[in-house]
Structure formats: structure tokens, C-alpha cells
Length: 627
Image 1: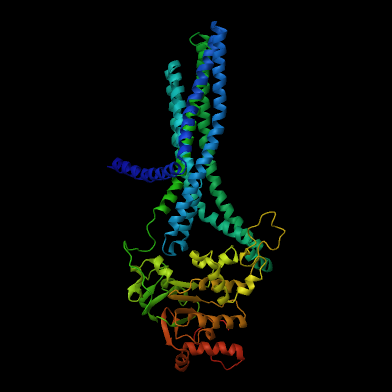
Image 2: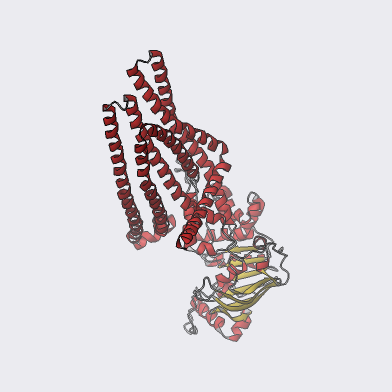
């Protein structure tokens, strides 16, 4: 019964490897079919050539001692020379073909990987460290998918060489042939075990490598350079980085030591077998049982069999290791949707009535604290709704639910009465524009930084410039060295550009904030506008100007505004105070002041920060507000 289970387990373990092999082979075949075929031809020639060299050598040596005519010897020598030339050229040709196939297959594999990642609906997987580790391994493995094809062809070539030399060896000494082959068994088992261990080690050290990369990027990042130097944190971060490097190196060293012991022992075994065979051949030649040519053929055959077995085993072990890694790539491209998706989604109609959160509960994972605890909220169409509350109250989480980056753990978010889970998420997001608090500063031109908000219009300067004017950043962009075409980065420069200060420009924080607003504005005529801290980092005059422009822009539109600066939300149609994961208060600015609750306390506290009023009431609970 146990052996049946073991057989079933082994067969189940082989299935992912076979699927990974099919994936890698499919990439190579689809990416460079001609190159794969040429590699196959080269592998056959490479398998025949060494055996042909051995037999021609035997014929020449025996011919010299046996009185063979000079013309025949010259012909044999010419054949030997030509075969040698072919053997010398084949590795170079194979290297070129492998590189060509690898480039084509890798290009196709990387495109498919990122297309698969782009199909993920939400954000959950991008906030999962285990997923990020697998994604990194998938990206690394698919950069050389043709290695699997190369390994398979190396096995085929090795088997051809093995068959040729083994037949030769059997003709001379069947016993020695069996001894040489039997000695290869432990080598094969050991190499496969080592490849499994190395693949497991690669997965184990991925978190440490990712943290090392994080510290390395931090230490070389222009954005972090000011704080690291001011706070003297370079040594601390460097120590952290080197600790992660040492952790990974310890794991690699342990694996390398195992390989050293195993492969060293196997090399000694191979040398003993070869030495014993040489002694037998010398004794047989002395007894006239073998000719000089036979001895040379025997020596070449033993070396050829051992070399062919070694190359086959090495190729199998390497392929096994690559397949274990490519399994991560296959897992990425065949992954199930991260959020439930209907086979046939409903179209997303224009927002007419509004958005409703009905008894919405949410937490990021089982066992994590609840962020939202039964939120009931209606955002009427055509009105401005403000969300306020202390840090961690759930404001940004609520925005993620509105964009369907996550689904509620319980409850539902409704778009004109239709659950968002029944709508096509891509069509839903076509009806939403947003400025996120953690907006991206793209290393692109100023025009592209705005146009990426609506890639269909990224090459249309009209909407881009109109959006920049609405955001109040047009004058700043026109004044750049190349205007809207100026690269907003100092990350990408050629040597010829390095001395040109106009090559790349770094904007101020406030300018980037306005650019992010323009990115949202270029998505004009959307049904819902989300503004998450849209004026963070702006001075008082710029903040006033931005909010005045926002009031004009969102008039008659459905908008959700999040801000810690309560003065910026006082004109919203409805202000919602989130506290403890629930809606604590809701109403207009005047209504909430009259209610004299949490909002009124916070508003007066902030106002006191501007007026210097020492009689401002103490908040009953700390609300992380910005005066």
C-alpha cells in the first residue's frame, strides 16, 4: 500500500515539472522555431563527431602499423582533420543559436508574464510578500527559457555520444562497459538531489535577497539621500543590507559545500574506474589481445562514455533545477483571478442615482484587525462627499473598495443599485478618475506624466495642456528647458547628455502634486472623481488656488474628497466622519458644527492652530490632523 502511495506521489510531483517543460519548450518553439531546428541539427552533429574521431584515430593508428597505403592514410587523416574542424566550430555555432533562441523566447515569456500580472483585478497580491517572491523568481526564470531546450538537446547529444562509445566499448570489453555505466548511477541520483536542494535554497533566500535589494536601492536613491545623510543612517542601513547578504550567502555556502563533497566523491569514483580500465587495456595489449588502435579506441571510449554520462547527468540536473524555477512562472501565467470575476460581466452604465456602501465590513486578511465595521453610506450622484477622520480610520481603504481594488469581506458596494462584483472592473475604472495620496512620479516626460492618466490621449497635446491649466501647472511646464517634452527625471542619461542640464529636470513636491492633479483632470467627463489629499505638500496660496479650481471642476459631478485639512472640505455637500471603522457623524459643515461632536472639536482645534486661540477644546480622542 505504501509503495502505491509513493508511486502516486512521485507521479504527482512529476506533473508540474512536465507542465513547466511544456511551457518552456513552447516559448522557445513559438519564439524561434528555425533556431530550435538548427540547434537540433547541431546537437546531432555534435553527438556523431566525437565517436567518428575515435574510430578514425583507431583506423589511422592501426593503418600505420599494418602497412596501409599512404593514400588511404592521407584520406583517413583528412577525414580526421575535417571532423576536428567540425567539432571546433559546433560549440560556437550552438552558442550563437542558443543566444538567439533565448532572446526570442525570453521576449515572449516576459511579455506573457506581465500580461498575466496585468490581468489581476485588485491589489491584494501586490501586497503579499510571498506572491512578490514568486513573481521575482518567475521573472528571473523566464529570462532564459531556452536553457530548457538547450538542456534537452544536450541530453540528446550526450545520448548519441554515449551510444556510439558504448557500442565501441562493448566490442572491446563488455565487463568494462557495464562497470562504467554502473558507476554513473550514483552520479545521476546525487546530481538530481543537489538540483532539488539548490532550487529550494533559491526560494528560501528570495526574501533575504529582496530585502537586500530594498536596502541597496534605498542607499542609492536620490529621494532618500537627504534624510540618510542628515540623520547619519547610512551605516545602519548598510549593516542591514550586509546582514541580509550574509544570510543568503550562508545558505549558498551550505549548498556549495554539499555539492563539493558529493561531486568530489563522484569524480574520484570516475577516476578509479578509468584508471582500472587503463590498467586492463595495457595488460591486454601486452598479451596481444588488443592492438595499439584498440587501446586508443578503448581509452577514448571510456573517456567518451564517462564524459557523455557526465554531460547527460549535468544537463538533466540543470534542466531539473530550471524546471523547478519555471514552475513559478507557470504558476503566475495560469493563476486564478485574485478577485471573483463573473463569466459574463454586466456593462457599467453612467452613474445616475449614486453609490451605496451597504453594511460593509473589511479586513485585509483573516486574523487581521477589522478596518471597516459595518459602514452604511450613500454618495449621491452629482454631489461632493468628504471623508474625514484620524489616520487608520479606513478612508483610503474605502477608496480602494470604490475602485474595486478589493472586495468587501462582508456587505456590498453598489453602483446605482448594482453590486460592483457584477460589473466589469476595467469598464468600472473607465468611469473613475483619482488623485491618490501616494501618487507616482513617473520617470517620463511632463506630457507623458499627465497623459498616462488616459493613455488613449497620451499623444494628444490639447487635453494634456488643458488638464495642466486646470491644475495650475501649465506655466511651470512651459518654462521647462524642452517644455512639455522635458524628461522629469535624472535617472536616464547617455554619456553625451550627461553634461546638458536640460536633459532631465526634478520638480518640487508642490509641482508634482499639481501634475498628479492634471493626470486626474485629463480623464475628463468621468462619473466619479476621487481626491485623496489633493493639496498635500502645497503652500497656503497654492492650496487655496487648487481647491478653488477643484470646486469649479467638480461642480455637478460626483466626487469623494479626503483631507486632514478640514477647511478644504467645509464646502462639501456632505461630510462623513469615520471613527473606529464606522460612520460616526454625517452632515454639512454647518450641521456638524451645530452638533458639537467630533468634527466640531477637530475643526476648532485646527482653527486654533491658525488663530492662536488657547481656549480651543481638547479632542476627546487623538485625531492625527494637520493644522
